[in-house]
Image 1 (spheres, protein in one colour):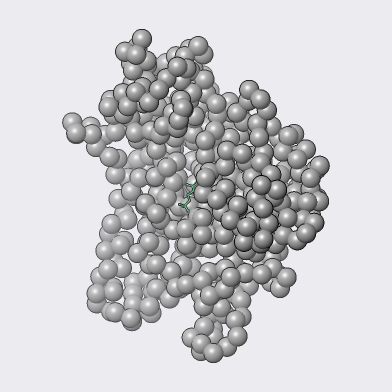
Image 2 (image 1 turned 180 degrees about the vertical axis):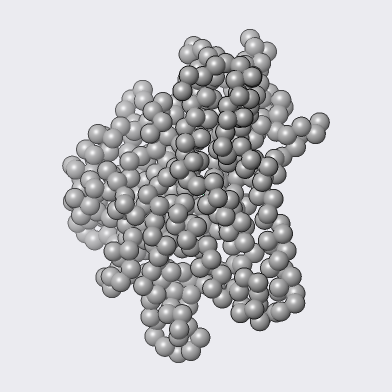
Length: 424
Ligand SMILES: *Cc1c(COP(=O)(O)O)cnc(C)c1O
């Protein structure tokens, strides 16, 4: 697309945007002067859908009026409640419904999956992660290694960018897998790196890993609701994600997990188990031996927190109405527009570390500002932008196609430009 550097052009793109009405389905945080913030933090905490509050009230009302009977007679009965979300969740991440389950939170799910897919022995005991993996993922991997009596110093392989580069090269990932494959038990990467915004080819990495006999799983915290993930066809063994970033399920909202169907009835895959993974027909007989549901539900431990699930469901309904294909199409245009504007500030001032190839990124730009410190970030915050600062010099912005406009992108650019001028 040919972009133009003007507010009127941004407004013209908004007029033509077939998803423009979705913005009004969300609450945009307000500044003190009553204007909306330029909210670019949907990769950190998505905004509140206007439907969520009423949906939570409905469950409070049913609990109030029905007590325990709500499990069967609530408007949305609690007993099968998690099943209402399955199909919509599966569409967002590109899986078969039986391969996904909304449960727990991300790091908990990561541990649950590693119990099943990281089973080191004396020969094959290593985990591959990115060197700049999100801290929680690293802590989870290291503690799993120690749990099995191994030493993270020896068993954690970190994928590192080449000197002077920030993003990983596919051929370097391939080389690590091919040269050390026989010692690697699990490859566990963010499918979209939280810091650089780099998106990895999951199918390709899975093929490399499987060829060496490794299990392959992805942390899709920054991918779910951002990119069309196609988890089933990627062939990966498992994936986990949170639903509160691009997926707008609220602070600390529930996470999700994907387990490829090939593992559902495989008795050689161990698992931590609880009653909500047991055959639904006999769950309440309570005395039977565990009988796994032949789906990702087998990994579900507890009866789920309905109040938290409500918020996931509200958001998934909006996602399904918008459709991942249309969201992706707008995301490419919107991120591209913002990139074009930011580039016009001059390569001597800014450097975008996120890949410039749209196929290698979603709705995020990580902008490195030369000689900047946090005062620049504080300035743009003051002027109404909500974004994210990573030491020492990176501003992360996420123009989210569901509720961000092309005008938001333009406003961000104008404010950044103004702040840079004031900085001199
Ligand atoms: C946001 C994020 C987390 C957060 O984990 P929680 O268990 O939801 O607190 C973990 N890993 C990655 C890659 C993330 O982006």
